Amino acid sequence: MNIRKVLTISLISFAFFVTGCSSKDIGSVQSIADEATHQRTMTKVQNNVSEIIGKDYKYVLENMGRPYCTTYYIDIDKVKNISNIEELNSIENIRLIYPKETNVDESENSALYMQLDNYIVKEVQTYELLSKDEKEDIKSSVDIIVDRYSEEPSFSSDKFENINLDKYVGEDIELFLKDIGYITSNFEIYDNKREKNIKVYLLNQINSLNNKIMLVYNNSDKIEDIKIVKISEGLDLINDFSFFK
Image 1 (cartoon, rainbow, N blue to C red):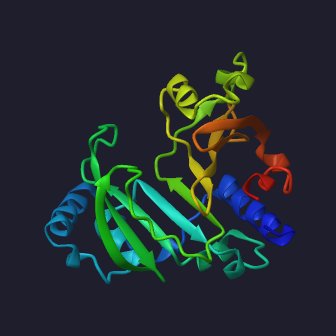
Image 2 (image 1 turned 90 degrees about the vertical axis):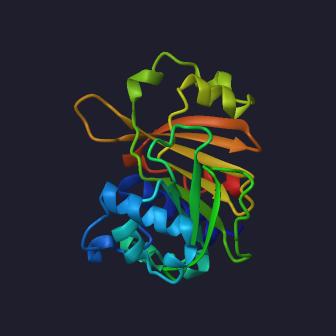
């Protein structure tokens, strides 16, 4: 991966850290679906996927609500010279995940996986929530993949003050996830083969806004590094993201 792409990936990721992102400006969405509308539409789609095929992103949000997870398939060549969050609206290839049940903690919970291209629903499949069996359509032009979760869990940074994070390096990611109670990261950044990823957790300090992030570097389910950095300091643009080279 060349230096320009590494720098662009870093800027995109930092934009996610600071402000979050929607692949399309949802300011035009008149209302996000309430629970009743969500369940009504979910039932229709489960009975007949043509109910949602061909609909646009705005329609999905207004009738299905916010997804559990939004996946952004990022072609760096289409987000050249990024300088602000609005420029990320050019990410046209996304996936939305909607659990069929409200309680997403149920391990057997299945979900609808919606693939959107140019903001239009092209395909709908059903898998177990976060299943590894999904036939994910990753185009050859994709450089990185970002999974962003709608839930906004956060830790107190104090939680990790007395924990030796180095003990997890080289260990299976499952050990770390178990120790933190399987709390979902705020988002995850993957290479285009989904072999390497960085789990990103926003950390809170008492009486302050989010100002730190914890980065968990994971390669084939093994932790390679864990670090906590201040958002205000950003990331080491080359050293951190050489992880994806």
